[in-house]
Image 1 (cartoon, rainbow, N blue to C red):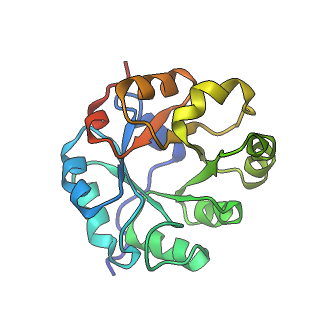
Image 2: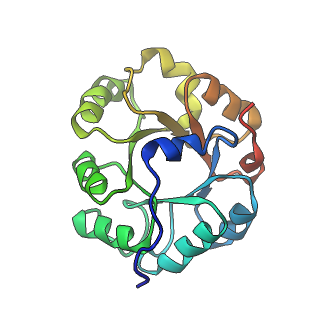
Length: 199
């Protein structure tokens, strides 16, 4: 294990990275990494992979001048508990994504950016989202599927945290619509969008 030497950004710094290039690269396969490193994407979201072998990958991402967020619930080899959070912190990640609100305070205590993912597959989820987010106080909320954000933005509660949108955002028109609906950024595995500017 490589001990953490990288200084994590604040949540404000994390969001500020999205101003010029709002599309984050969602890495769902090993062969996506090299393309993402060479892209304009300011932040890489690792959604799949071996959580026990992340430290050298994180170092490569930092060496490329980018930030890295890891989805604790989805990477292999780690439990979605405080030990998993501690492992990722020691691996040098900048942010941790989870659907588990009770882990948000643990992530914050490690000095990392805490991103809570909300899966809005039913209208009733909108009714409970505000309470869940108010209780956990993440730095950032990621809404899935992101492509529906323009249709439901008027129904959503006003979160105190900035909103990212991920899932099924596959075209520039999708991404622009999501950003126009109030998202500060988009997470997408569509490499063609990683060069999208913030204009």
